Length: 88
Image 1 (cartoon, one colour):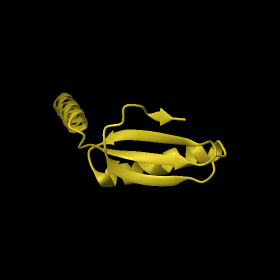
Image 2: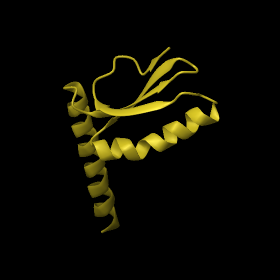
Image 3: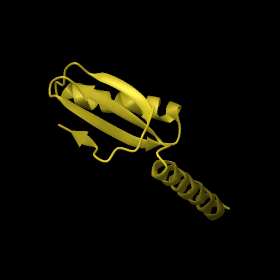
Image 4: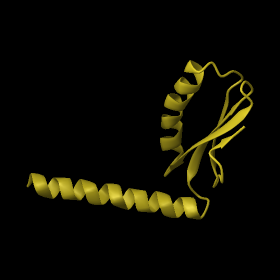
């Protein structure tokens, strides 16, 4: 029974990853876009299957940037397909 549960979870994870990949290919996945004034950078984190999942995940990224003393931080959740994850 435990083996069946593990296989089911693995299948669900694989299906979710496939769906995220498909959404990302078509530019429909959600991304967290974080712009900082100092340093002057744009960061993209994702892809996410939903806007809510992206919103929930943004706090960890913000903590990391604040720990690195980034200033002038602005966050957007958007559907996009970034070519580069960090733009300086």
